[in-house]
Amino acid sequence: MNQPLQLILGGARSGKSRYALNQGDEGCFKKRIFIATAFAGDEEMRLRIERHQKDRAGLWQTVEEPYHLTETLERQAVHREGVVIVDCTTLWISNMLCGMGGKILTMEEIEMNFDRFVGTLSRVKCAVRIVSNEVGSGVVPDNLLGRQFRDLQGQLNQSVASIATQVISMVAGIPVKIK
Image 1 (cartoon, rainbow, N blue to C red):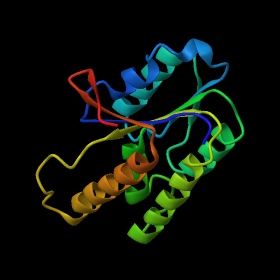
Image 2: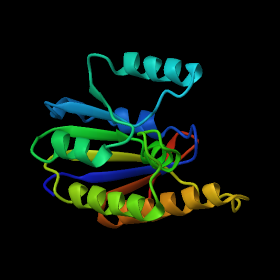
Image 3: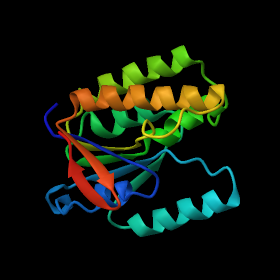
């Protein structure tokens, strides 16, 4: 990897996305790509996505990809210079578990997607910022789907953190450097 890989972790509404977007070094990047994994399953989410798209307009090229994240990252980051933000792996995992791409994947299929994703991250030519929720600090979910999600999120966070050049934990909008 030629450029830094940054993992930005935190709870919901902790400032992860804002931090990923506003680090102040965008001026040195000719190309700025924002890969969004959100799926507009209801009107509130559709309006939220629209608002975020408008906030980034003109500064970032937005690529909407709720399901085929690895392939999109490969196209956007492996052979380019610049910066790519992936926001966020949490929704990507949810989309795979709940079938937002047309098919519910098994745990094994999702883990294979993780391996491909981490392999792609290790080959990128541009700076990459991965936004992800930290879900391991809460209670053990009381249902199988919740536990599977929590386990997958923790597994992916650990895999990305192991190859990241920097890991940031967001607490109430304040970045705390972990690695």
